[in-house]
Structure formats: structure tokens, C-alpha cells
Image (cartoon, rainbow, N blue to C red):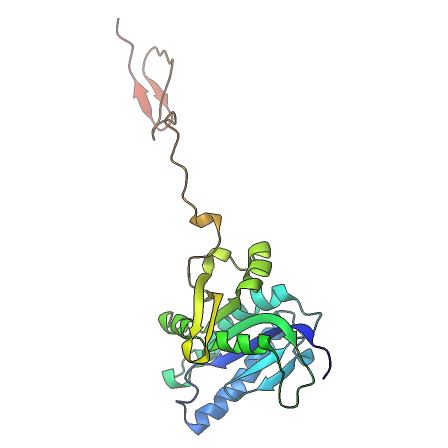
Length: 241
């Protein structure tokens, strides 16, 4: 067994794939591959360098060591969402393609006999299959993609670089009880405001100072002689006495 390598891992899965007819599954597979290739190209990612394990309705990908984590976390899902929106126009609901994307990082054995032995691989697949991510995509039915990232990637990439706004991520506990899986993660649905992220926009705003002037126009120490206009046609007459 060779030593493991620390890599970014991505799991992508298609919503409602098994409900499609054979013909629609075939079309969906073709479209999925085309969309992923185009999305990677637009995000500046070299998909040819990915180690991909296809799954019919999606894929598991082990990314090269030089990959940009900012591009994977901050660019891929929004581009996928836009390309799917273009693809899905005019299609019947059963033919639409909607994707769940999960991103994590960790140690991976690249010399497995039947895949990639790795807790990180298991983790990203569980995130992708979590009820919380599936529900997010169902709730935002206009969206075409939903992203979930592990807590470590959220803190390392989203919080520091903000290619996607942190406050547009929702913090969740991704749970699959029958798999004994539970992990903190962050969900983002492109074009939707999820809320719950780490952002100063969510902090309470300070109350206005007691000495702050009230709204409107205030004049201090003004002496006028004859009709005079101030600002938006405010008029003061001659002073009395």
C-alpha cells in the first residue's frame, strides 16, 4: 500500500435519476458530462487531470494537488447552476437535470484495487447524500444546483476569501443515522439567500446616537430678512419683534 495523498475530493449526484426512463437516463448522462466539462473550463479547472470514478447519475472525483480550492468552492457550483438553467429551458420536469455537489479534502489512497480508500471520500459522499442537502434542493425548486462543503473548507476558503458570500451559506448538521454519520457542513444554493453564515451583515446594527438629528432639515442660528428659501423650497418669513 502506497502512502496517501492529501487531495480535494468532489462528489456530484443527479436528483431523481432513478425515476427516469432508460432514454432519459441516457440523455441525462450525456448532458451531465458535457455540462461538467464546460463548467470546469469556465471555472479555469483542468478536468483532464481529475481522477474520476463515474456512477451513472454522477461521479466521484479526486483532484490534482495543484488545483485551486478557491475555484472549486467558489466558482464551480454557480457556473454549473447557470449551465443547467440554460439546458433545462423548455424541458419537461422529468427531463430536467438538477445536481448536488459536495466538496471536502483529506488523505486519499490512489492505489486502491476498486476505488479510492479514504475517510475523506466516504465523508464527501455522505455529505452529498445527506437529507439536508437534498431538502435544500427540493426547497429551492427554481435552482438547478446545490453545494455543500465541509466545515474545514468553509472556514479555510469561504470565510477568508469570500468568492461566495459567507452569509449565503447555511450551517447544518448533515446526518445519515443508518450510516452512523454526523458532521457539521455548510450549504449554498446559487441565486438563493440561505442565511446563517458568518457575516457582519447578520450582526445587529448599533442604535442611532441620542444626539443624532431627526430626519428632515434642521436650521440653527439662522436670521432671515424677507422670504428666504432653504434646501427643498423651505421658506421662513420675517422674524417677529
